[in-house]
Amino acid sequence: MFDVAVIGGGVVGGLVLRELTKYKLNVCLLEKESDVAMGASKANSGIVHAGFDAPTGSNKAKFNVLGNKMMESVTAELGVKFRRNGSLVVAFSEEDIKTLATLRARGEENGVEGLEIIDGARLREMEKNISDAALAALYAPTGGIVCPYELTIAAIGNAMDNGAELFTDFAVKKIGKENGGYVLIAENGREVKAKAVINCAGLYSGKIAEMIGDNDINVSARKGEYILLDRECGDFVSHTLFFTPTPKGKGVLITQTVDGNILIGPTASEQADGNTETSADGLSFVMEKAMQICKKPPFSNIITSFAGVRAYSDRHDFIIEKSKKTKGFIHCAGIESPGLTASPAIAEYVVKTLVGSLLALERNESFNGTRMPDGYFKDLPIEEKNKIIERDPSYGKIVCRCERITEGEILRSLRVNPPATDIDGVKRRTRSGMGRCQGGFCQPHIAELIAKERGVTLTEVMKNGEGSNLLVGVTK
Image (cartoon, rainbow, N blue to C red; front, top):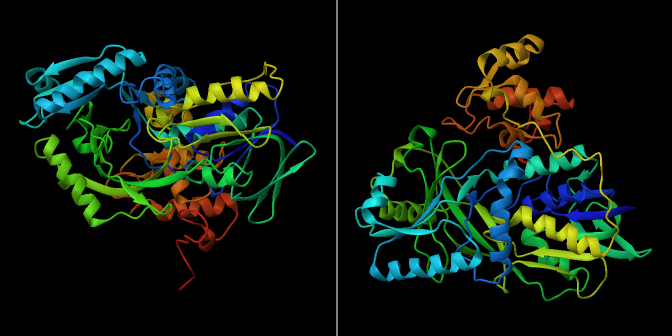
């Protein structure tokens, strides 16, 4: 029996798992997909919010500001790219300017540092492509950007390196009680037993709660569609640009990514499920909004579009609490924006305060919180690269031309925790297939490497989980 089982392999579940391994506990993570970071943590804006949006006193405000301050050290330990590029909330009317003043006052009350309202002239000095119609902006220098799936994979990998176990393809369908703990039963009949359970199941956290009788956690889905531009136009903006928020939310933004692309989106449409199809109307809306906030966005450099589905609760705040029905069950539900920013602080609170009130927490003196970056090779000086290639010639073979990813890096992604098992898993760990050609050249070679490494045939290699076969048979 495990001491603690975490349900859900997103960024919150991943950082909770890592936090648990700082103590002498036997812990595991249950993920319903074939890989981690497959839900909202795979497809969101990657923004580390400053903390001026959320109502003062809310869980969102508290954990946003704390998480923002922790992000620099957490990402440094895990070898994850993070940058404080600063954010700008742009005003286009006098009414918008009044809203900026409200946001600044709220942010200062929440504990956000360095907020200031700048005029149009300074705004244009900071952002050369801002719309001529922009009048002013709220500048938040503590805002930043991070790669959400890179952070998730690194956190879970580090937890596994420190003794945590990962069970993928484990969709919990039933939860029972046994010997003072819980029996978690998957759709395929597998079972895991644990003294305590932490529900970090994202979009499905309400359904998990219902399995133990907590029927007051209502979680719904909201889809956001995005457009991604090639790194060729990565200097189109340097800060994260927001519209002044309305009662419906923050709206479409434009930002750099930590890897040098430009990301535009998202939309916000209610969903009955986790459908992530993009739509012509949604992408047209994103482009229209981008043209309102910036002059001549370089849409000729679009390399892909995608959608993510995020969970939100009818409480309009993070639900971070013990079960009201049974002892030893903890909920982290409705973790919408700014959940990515808040995740390190949520993890620390959940483990130290909530788990600590259930189980004795004894420090794990052998815990090692550092991890070598997944993309370490391409950032090395040429002399260091040559030394590695001398030891392992696979690092001298370029597989992905667009992103300059080597065979050695791809093989490493299939071997280090948590190991990739399909094409998209390799893509999230190495960026192979994320360039202008979107895998047009490198995908066949990557499939061959996966087949050889895993000892399977090419027809058994998946693109993105069960049923996504690249090949269905041999023709010659």
